[in-house]
Image (tube, rainbow, N blue to C red; front, side):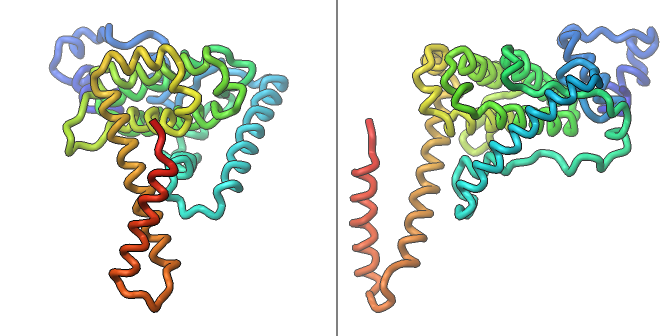
Length: 286
């Protein structure tokens, strides 16, 4: 535990009272989150489900994993001609960790299996918040590896939550909104200034919301969260504007490459501007 971060090392081995009494109180950490922190300290990983290795559990887990992989492969096939600039493609391809198995600790207790979200898991909010809380714990105690792991697990969980069944369930969207609320209310994900980058946890959940906005925007809990103001609506507007600028730039570059070679620069510019205005007016919405 002391090797995880400097704050823990001082608590356990330093001259502080806790080190002398060999007892540390951590009231800000929930019991379940602390157990996963200990698991991470010894294994370099943490699990969300029971320690199970029975054949029926493994079959169920393999079925869910195969389903998720098929969904991801299908989406990638749909986007195979893309250059990767679209938000949904960038989000889909994101990874926060190096390939699994690069550290010896990952080969310890391999029978510890993580329960994947799916049809047999109704409480998605608990899974979302657990990953979010573990990320914030890594931020508070300065454990970058734990933050990356929590982001990777949350990202994988959200990838599994892209089915129509999930997105059309108001209760499941409530679970997503609970994650958004946590990301924008925790003291370890502070608001940013205009020139500062967005917190990684906030960016992950915000991108999911933007990609599936059509399914989320009508949710009452989400509307209430927006009405409360704060950094969320500001980040949402800023993020949408950045994406629109990126799309416009991409359209401009694509259009330039398709213009006749013989035209003058002024003729090309006038034609592009006229096309841009037409495209903007036809695609605009209230």
